[in-house]
Image (tube, rainbow, N blue to C red):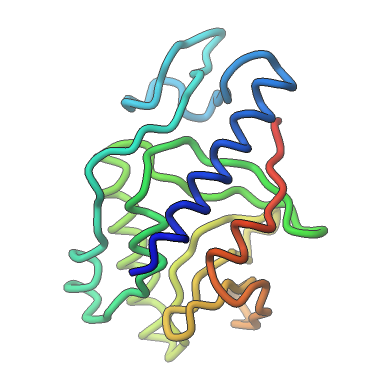
Length: 181
């Protein structure tokens, strides 16, 4: 496994937090995560949580691999096994997105179940396997890791159209612009 991708996620997260703190004078805030337990929570205010990332013992997607009977790309293991954090808003050129992050141990279990369901549906539809890493404003498309090549793609879920955004996770994360909302 290439540790660079893990470092790029950490660097992006640090940049994201810096922008929040410079713009708002506090850590990132989320009303969506209010009431959801996490070791990331540093404070609660007005039905919202302030959070900072933590780096727990590394997690792997081994259960998802076993259940879906597929070898998941190393970059997906690194992306989801590096840290716990809130989802982070970003811009990829003209595309607004939200990087999916793991919030807690329970959230990691839910994520694995969603990845299994996604992979099983793709198998049923005879589609190329992908591992989602971000959502967009369009509910019918996701940002995903192409499980065979490691390319980062924009995937249209209904039509199965894909567009390569970056050759790998490292390049993708290094070229994202964080947005404090």
